[in-house]
Image (cartoon, rainbow, N blue to C red; front, top):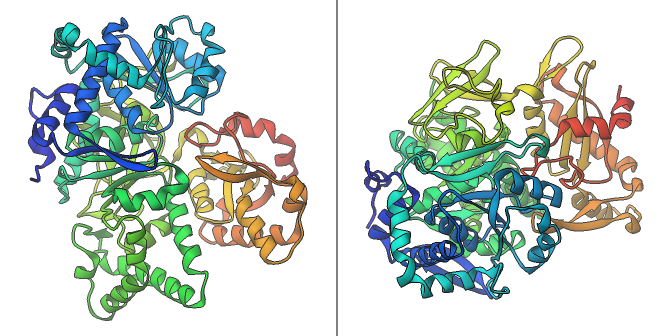
Length: 638
């Protein structure tokens, strides 16, 4: 049975537990979670999920977790992460998302700022690590390990399975208390606390109520419904971005659960294509860098042979021409109707030929059912967007912030416009200041930061608008395009304004560039600090028989994948590497205005890292730190 999302929500559905109760009533035997355990795929139905969640909530109550207490989760993505999250909320507590990559200092700062009473962690190593500095967090009473086989001391350290079992044993004793807490919850009851990925010296956190979460998780579905794309309970979401990130939490995890969808979890980033063939997602939330990596991966595979290269180059050309042919006089495309049904004549035949040779292989590799790819969190290169859309991927550009509980605007399926995002989603208002800054207010948007009055000053207007800090363009159809963060706009010495975001997006679409920091404030021209894709460069050097010092190579796990993170100076100073990078920069500059072009660059022999304070947990560069740390290298460019 296919039920529209809109059928599941009424006036009484104003809390997360009530929304999930609705889901269970309609889809109790449908799969809620799909994940790999001990090498085998496991399915959890909604009936099983909510039974476990209620038992966990009862166990938390038995441990003394009270309504309004703060419960933290510091772990990588897993089904158990979501169980811990929902169990905390069912107990009336406030769930606090903590990036698993945070250092001891940062974790301590977040835990003390929120006053965490209980902390869920990933594995026994994390238990050991946090036990070493637990005394620095006075409010922390309990540690819970998500690892399946873990058994604690029965006093203040537990395994998740132990707690769920404890709750089942105490069900008769405490079920009435759980029911009372669930009944007492209201739409304005606090539910979840999410920190921005900024500096711990000025912690900014958004405290969301139950109603905020429901509004945020469903407004994108309502928006799609208004623009010709009906999302129903058959959605299968690939949970890939960190759930600690507001975008994945709202749109990849909670939203699909509220409408009876399935959450599919990969076993590891290295196994994504293998796992996706089993999960077969219909929905995914990604950042532009991931879309670029996907495209470049397919390109690499096809370019490995002569016939593949010919097919790929033709397919890319056809994809571009197809989207151009489908645009009306305002640039709108209808993505609710398959591309092949809209094209005519020889172009249609070319597209079908490219579909047979290239496109279907790409779709098949991603499970064959992917309908919606929400891409946000950074600027996406328009050329890449056009190519992927022309290949049959519905790339829905989204815009949102932690403070807005993620997406407040997303592409319109039946009035799709390259490089532009739609008018605001239902329940949200936009206003543009004279300097181009976007102000927002409405459902799901915070009205103040959590325990940080200093951060409120200058961020919220007296009449309730939140200053996003983003410079935007808004056209006659109320469509919006992000220019850049206000504080990241570079002003050259001639007064020209340069948006870092566009240059970074173009660099991100290159297979040769891994990371980049754009500089040039008050300078004559734009410069760049570039971290090459070391693995790619090493492979090219090896294929060309160019020697290099293998002793200078260092490897580490990055986002679950074993990669080269540092090379010797001989590689970055190699003339072949420099020439290859210059060719890449020339191609990027061809897409930029003259004053925006990268006129000088320096190659780094190591990746920017979160440990060194150079990037945030969401992988954005901390330009202030980089400007200070690499001052001498930057000065060389000028």
